[in-house]
Image (cartoon, rainbow, N blue to C red):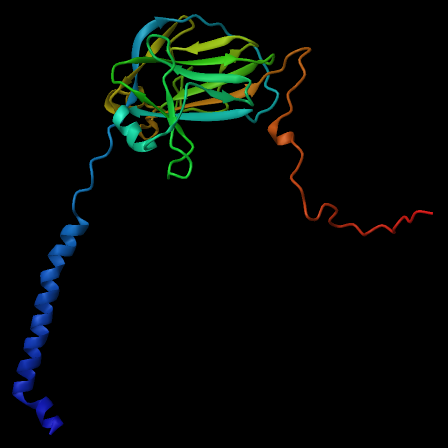
Length: 269
C-alpha cells in the first residue's frame, strides 16, 4: 500500500507542490538577506589633515651630534581630528592633559594653537573600550605648532612627523632621519614643514584632500591624522648618562641559575 502511494501521481504532485513552496519560500527570503548585507554603512567620521601652509620665517643651522644609541629613548604619537569625531572616539569623561612627558619626564611635549595656548589632549578612560592614544581636536583652517621643552641637563635629538611625513625633509617618517637638537633647559618650537634653513610651511588643519601627505609623492593618505615624535639622547661632555630603560634590572625569575647544580650546604659550627 505504501509503495503504491509513493508511486501514485497524486503523491508526486503533492510532493512537487511542497518542494515548490519550499523553493519559493527560500527565494522570497534571499532578497531580504542580500538587502541586509548590502545596506550602506554609516558614513565615515570626518577627518582632518595638515596642509602645507604659508611661509613662516624660522632660522636653523646644521650641527654635528652623535646619538648614544640607535634605539630611541622614547616614542609617542597623537591622533587629531575635528571636535565631533574626537568626542565620539574618547567617549564621556575622558582623561585630559595639556602636555605629555617623554623620556621619563625629561621632555615636555605640547601642541599649541595660534595664540600659543596648549590644545587639550584627550584619551578615553581605561576600561571604557578606548586605546592609550591621546587625541586633540582641531579646526579646519587653524594653525598649530609643536613645542618640546627640555626639563633636564641632557641633550636630545627630536624627530617629528605629521601625517607620516618627516617635518624636516618631507619624506616618509623614519628613525634613521636626522632631527632637531634640543639642548638642556631649552624649548624647541616646530611651526611647519621645513622649506629651507630660513623658512617653514606653516602647519594648518585642512580637509584630507588638501593635506600635504595627499599631495606629495612621499605621502600616504592612510597616515593622515597622526603626529609622531621620537627622542634620542645625545652625547654630552661632563653629563652623566641616564640609565636607559632597556638597561633596567631583569624581572624576577623562577629559575635564576638554570644549568647549574646545587652547591653543598655550609653549616654553622
